[in-house]
Amino acid sequence: METYQGTRTPNGCQVTVSDGTARKRPLPLRLDLCNHSPTGFEWGYAGSGPAQLALALLADACESDDAALCHYQQFKRAVVAGLSASWTMTEGDIRRFVETQRDTQ
Picture 1 (cartoon, rainbow, N blue to C red):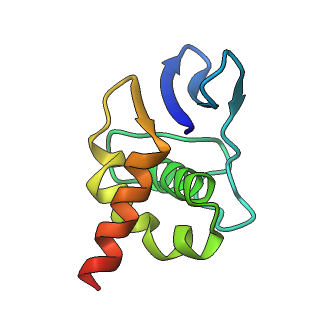
Picture 2: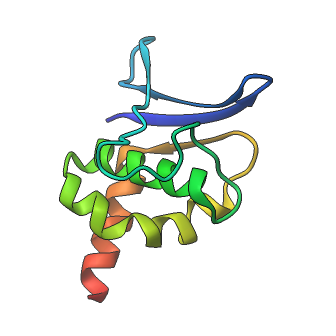
């Protein structure tokens, strides 16, 4: 199961994905799905940078562009807007959020 980690650095916000080993990769912005923030990710409020992060997290964790596009605004408001300066979440956390959204529709 993958783990997502966000940190604020002097060079901006960085989000990495770990597969349980020491290897980490940067989370792709996924501007191909929707271009909210070409300058990068943000979190802790409900703006364009957080929208880009929510979209990228959902697309990566769910492996479904359609699910990401359907649920990222709700995920932004419910989760990404409340994240602190550094955070960690799992693929399972993200998938559970999407499942709860499907159950309420």
